[in-house]
Image (cartoon, rainbow, N blue to C red; front, top):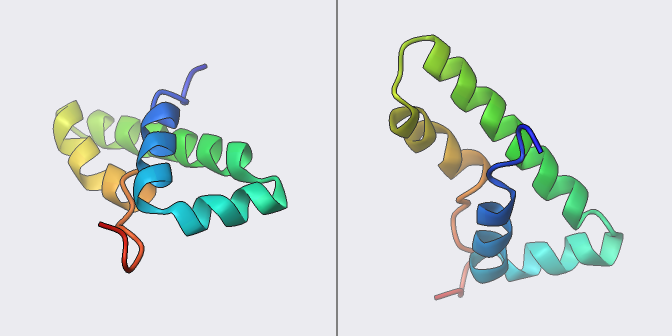
Length: 77
């Protein structure tokens, strides 16, 4: 489970704010793979920034919007 600590956060966020993207991933059978990849990548980047001297919350503020907490799709409120 190492590196997958953001998986449930990503799934919850994507289902709520990126429903079309989630539907497409499900259609192609890639949702689990994509959410796990995003979680691993986020964890790796957060760890790297922490090794460089950032606090965890600072690193997450930089990384999560790009990989986990994606902007809502148009029309989703």
